Amino acid sequence: MKTLLAVFVLGPILQYNIYNTRQETEAWKKRDPELIHYTHSHQDETIEGNILKRTILVRLVYGIYHRLRKKSAFKEWWTTVHYDWVPLEYILTPDETEKYIEELKKEEERKYFGVFVRNKERPSSVAPGCVVAIRGTDVRNLCDIRNNYKIWIEMLHTSSLSRLLEVVILRLCAKHGYSNVCVTGHSLGAAAGMLVCRRLALKDCPVESHFFNPPFGTLELFMRKEEQPNMSSIYGDVGNHMRDKVLHAMGDAEKRSKAFAEFKALAASKWSPYLYVNEHDFVCCEYLSHFEMTADRSIEEDWKKWFSPEISRNFLPDKETFHLIPAAVLCRIKNYSGTRVSAHMLLNWIDPHIPCEVKHVKLM
Image (cartoon, rainbow, N blue to C red; front, side, top):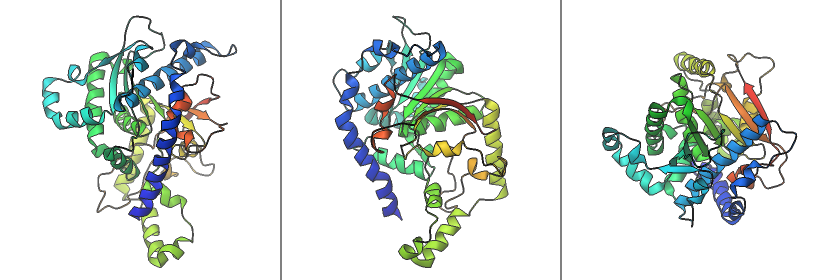
């Protein structure tokens, strides 16, 4: 089972990164900040503002990618859109710095995220005042592969990335106010950002969130999609028995009740993150079906919308769901001429002219 999962998770990631390495240089041709002002004449100011904000946020995330890879002039990704980099030691208190010293050492090595504050040179009215930008997977880092695995088993909250990210965002919110902080990320970074922002929303402190190609995939979901007789030919009756045991283990009534209470609390918080989803991207396309209501069942009856069954109570007793949310602003790419691997590229979202359907979706 571990071998199958490794192939399924790592294979596409490796292919994506090889493709991305060749193609990402095209983004440098589009780095002229004036390009983000190009819009179609029929678009109103709100749509233009959303496009401008999207392209700004993509640039900040690209800056984190290129900072890790030590690309030349990587700072231009944020300086050209009038943001300043803020070191983490200027954000955390001395006590927090001491408490999270190990997480800070790992972040210095792995360079997962950065904090940016808009400067006053030529600020756009739609540009967020303070942004936390989080990169996605780099296959050269084993810790990234481990964190991708943690996404699948819903244990990402145990990563040093999530722990440090949460305390940094909380400190920024305390200083600037929740309404002035924006969190954005791509792929793995989107998952980590969603985890932390979901927690904040449950505390009735919703933060503006923009997540590009956020993963919607768990081991349970993968097995549910593979509910086919051919498992017998691979694993025999034992395999089918184990699969059925996993797929139908809904947990006890207390856990289901807690999960639905969280789902209702998220709805009450009015948190609606922007989810940038390419329907041809296997990593995130499940969000499209997630936000489709089941005709013959109420949301409370349709428990798969808000409750993720336990895979193993013995080995994963403290897993935490991040992807099951009641509302979002779904930004969807329908028509795409690239491959299913290139569909996951952050580069797709930097073009202000890309055809994108935007819809506010709610399950309750």
